[in-house]
Image (cartoon, rainbow, N blue to C red; front, top):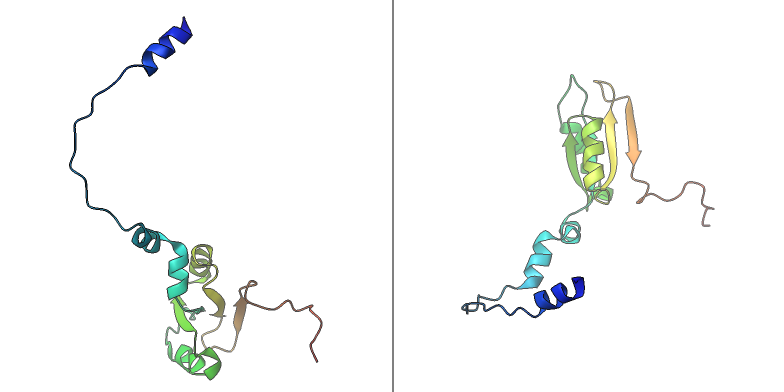
Length: 127
């Protein structure tokens, strides 16, 4: 029956040809190379910008980023808000905020802040 067939299969011995040993691989290097956490460790936080459709002059980005509060933050320019969303889905913890300029004169804009890096606005104030 079935048990006999199973025992016969298990007791079959196979002979394998000897093979020369291969060079050892450093597994730590593999984990570092393919780990997403290593990407985050080596990257700085980013602020995304979407420039107006009719004014792609990025001097405003330079002026904003020259402020000392952004010393450890790098700018990244996106084509549109959809591109920000795509990037955010992949690198959620790197994109701390974004500025979307809605008018060619830069006077109308939308600020978007990553909720994992911003304090809760309803938290009691510390005096």
